[in-house]
Amino acid sequence: MKRRPTPQGDQITPPIDDLARLPAPVAAIRAKMLAALDKNDIEALRIPIDWNEVRPLFVKSGTYRAGTDPIEILKALSFDGRGREILSILRAVLAQPFVIITRGPVTLYEWPAFAHQPHDATHDANTPAQWACVRFADLARSNTEGKPRPMKLAIAEDGVWHYFWSED
Image (tube, rainbow, N blue to C red; front, side, top):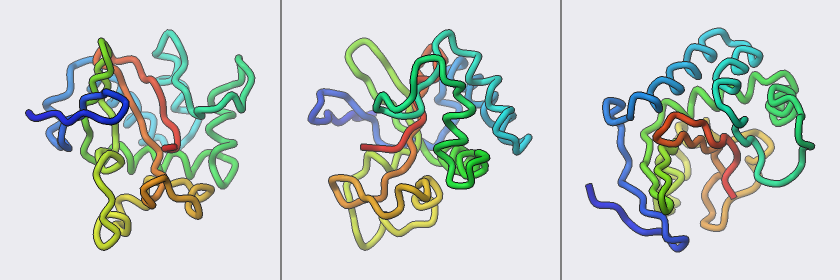
């Protein structure tokens, strides 16, 4: 599979929709997330969050102090304040194709793949699947390419959930 380099030196595959290509640890944490989503309760995400030795990041900047409850962060990021928006977005993100990103010695599986596609204002920026991955708070802001700012989720090949945050 041809990988393309990014300006940061990462190597990224084209979009992949074959979940059989996920390594077992990545598939396992994804399955834990989906099981939590089936409960439709933000508190259920505590299981996959705590499965990591180190908690995944939910914001890029230092907005929250160390030790802040990750469920409280997700609730605060959610428009409704209870986490329902985040549950809906996480479900939408995991339903999308993914890409494999190689950053030096680290290999990440990142959803949604469309976050890495070139901008096409007549097609991809208006699809319902893309908008379903965008927080209400991010609707008015586009990224540097003019695309919506979707939430992105990355899991390392060893099954460690690295982040779930809005794109820069």
